[in-house]
Image 1 (cartoon, rainbow, N blue to C red):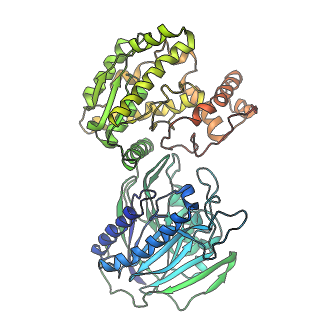
Image 2: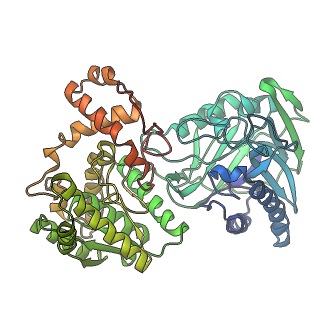
Image 3: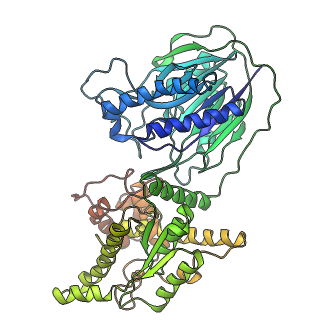
Length: 581
């Protein structure tokens, strides 16, 4: 057996910031050298950020990525880091990049490169291109067919990218034939709830299939709707977990491995599945024996803690990466705005959160007092602007009643928030939840106005769970619960007419959310929903409401995806649509 110390850089790049992302590579490579690592690995599409979407189709962007990879190799050498092999994801293109019908313009590729001693040792492209859920990589990339295997200190190390691990066949299937002792996989795998540790199970299975240790390095950070949770890990050839990085935090996971020394020249050229093994020699000599460090296995968060961490990280990075210095939101005293304010305060600090209390003629006394209490508990910036006079002025000019009058109040509040955003430079946070968004119970250009929606993908029942969890966490730490108890326990209401409650128009949220999750989350049709135990009349009503509200959801701000199927990248239905079964 031979020894190897691998450093896995679980980092947070920004899409399009090639200079900043390359700077992260240099910083973490320097840290890896300080840890005496023999190899440092970065995630999928590290140099460009991920996903780049249609930027991949811009020739100038692909050219800049390729140039950045070569310039980074030279920079690492210039800064005394060239002896450390650095493996990173980047945007490349196929060498014979010609326009072909049915292929992305310029033949861009989701690629991996090894940088060493001032040069690019190899590049290789992702073979399996995911085209489901939030992924549509057939639109952006052309596949590769190479399994790169590098002999490093007498150990054969193979490299693959994300989906190549998830799908049978392809480069990962060729690792055993290639005789590699270690498979390194670069990933941009987003978080979603209820994955039930699928990554560890998958890595363990692939390690056993390949008869090789496996190192899985993942992105961390928010990118528009997606949140990457890190959770990088290393398993041995039997699938046993050796090391694991924390979730939702940047980290350099350094792990010492005992690996089989190479047994000779190994397989070259084509192997089964149309994959070609391409070999590169860096060093034959094993490293001198060294004392093995204890393996680090960070504990995983529980279910609600994961979701809350994802919402905080997604909100923080949307604010930070888009250059906003502060946020503003309407604070009603209800549970939704209370949770959004708390997420924002945890994400960027309470001093940068501005809450506007906007009571109207129908606002209850406890709504105002509950909002004021949250401001006091959390130390966020609060102000009160009565919207009654603004509503009165509009009603004096135009005769309205019923739903139009209710929506006017919401639109005045939305207009006020957007005006303060323009005047003071805040990002407006929208406070609606997934249940409201599904049923269409939001006012277009009113409570739906804003730039980012932190709980857009959280059912109302999950909102309550998150609020209770966050308060319990504070109390466990000896702190004051951030959300007033009354905001959690009182019946939810939009307070747009006298005595209004959500249950006037909707069933109890546990009943509603279960039905909506089956319809939205798994695409069950009417008969299947009834067979699953949902009330037939309620099924008919909710299908009608959900389908009619599609035009509203198209105009809703982005928000972090935490479920298996969110409104946005996951679910794309026509607005004009008569299919109802």
